[in-house]
Image (cartoon, rainbow, N blue to C red):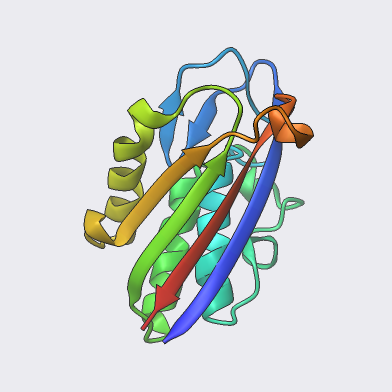
Length: 155
């Protein structure tokens, strides 16, 4: 068994869609990034890659590569899942937390879990997504962006 941890952060930007866990969330701002800036999916990918000692998403999907400009992070997550499978790993579980002062995410969490599980071909009972605020503290608390942490267990 192998444990991995991932962390990602993106700042808010106008004229961008807000996508978390593959789910488009209505909001007046999106997140800035080379891809769709899905901070939750990025943290999950880093946790999975880290557990398998395969580097991070920057190694596999560099932000200087135009092939990944605006790409749906679920496409990248699917590639990470395939790479893990090729290396003989199975995902036991994923536990992730999104840190955002806004918007409120509870109505979208089940959709995120379904999307992530479906992309990876695992049961929804293996994917946990939670959300919290920072009570007005730090850059997320000031509403400047969104962060996410993820841990996973591979077998």
